[in-house]
Length: 378
Image (spheres, rainbow, N blue to C red):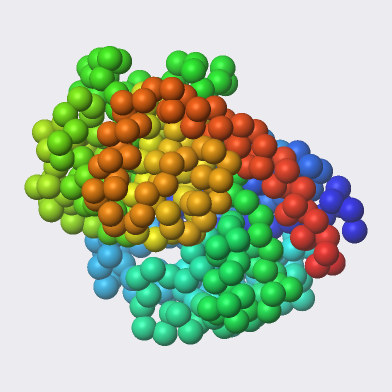
């Protein structure tokens, strides 16, 4: 079956639809596939619509109770089985050729609820859950046995699947995460952002370098290590931007005066302003496979300073990033100081980042790899 006749259902039941989903759907549609994004009601407003593919909101993540509460969890679980059964009926009616899941959030149930009679692909954005509930790890392994193919974004992740989890190597396919260039203004990375910075950040003069740590705040992201490393760096600003998914009071207590926090959800049209202003993007993660923040920085051609974890060294091999050992605050401090003192080094990293975004991490190439996988399953 040719890619022009494939009907693809890309399924993401998570609480909000990541930009990865929209970028992949758009690239598959440009390559000639008939693509539908099947997703949830968006937690922060209407689900974004793209060009060239349909969007269906089949999962209902509106639930009572406070975030993280037992009431909220019980309500979501009660919704989940009807949601998955509705999805199976929808896929039959739409005559999809492939169902490509981006997340499966209730693994012990999902292994029994996946659609039948069509190929199922699962993207392993996280090879295993980082904060697993009882029984979740074993259920994740059973899911890998149940699906027809697994996409992973790095050779590091593929090695874990094949070795640590003993997944059939024939099922494992390394397809990169793409550069998230949908956040870049139409005129390019240097064009005016569609929405300005918050006033308290816009007041920072261009003469002072800004280091950006962006994304949801979680313990594994090593922000505490970054704040320790930042001590003694007085001639620049550190901006920690993103919605907290942890107690941030200890982080505020660690922070020197030249650290600014924007602790909230950041809308898509705000992202460009933060990356436009950044002179260096730092991701001091303790663990990861790959990161959407990293691929946003690539799209903006920003120099990167990364922990040497997961698939990060594979991106650094393109010349787009410097690496430090994870959890090593002194090494991170030295690398920050060196890069802040060397604009030419930052320029070289940034140029390599933009080249990587246009080359191995371009969406059109990723779409071709993904379509070849779908075709192999027919």
